[in-house]
Image (cartoon, rainbow, N blue to C red; front, side):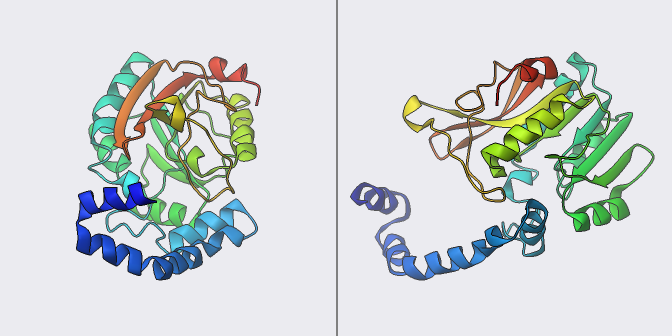
Length: 251
């Protein structure tokens, strides 16, 4: 605790640190109240509530700060390399969220087919109204249990960090039973082993996960795109896997 306070003083100064200490009980109460959505009965209801309340409180994207134009800059610049190298012409992007960064990517990189999938029906309705065309469409989709449409690549960005172990396992089984060959998925690479313990959560909550560590034990990716550094603990990457690599994983 003392070390944390000292670090805060160094980073924010005495006055701001004192304010944080004084208002901590009230802010903690608001935080707990805001997370009442976790008591809802299923994933669809929880993620819909996150959307309706703008839980992430981001001015640019209701999908949160990870979907901003700035954060996705390196991903947007490196993703064409993946498409060319692995002959990707069709993409399932699920969850697609509000399409904030992807609309810029598709403006510069034409695909034969793009399907944006999301469990929140309001997102799908709005995206279809704003962005649907001959090559781009949006569908309501629960990637944990519903059949995935045929595409060359599935992008699953900032999603498994919100799933319980059970739902991650069910999603992976679902993906491996799909006609999709490649998966591009968010992964966290820790700087050292002292911080590399994964933990289980209720679906709808969030934490960082290392897919290469237990209980997931993913193999080395075919391709990796670094997105950002995170809290001095490690870095966030989009990692590419062939379905044959994931089919052999016991989860």
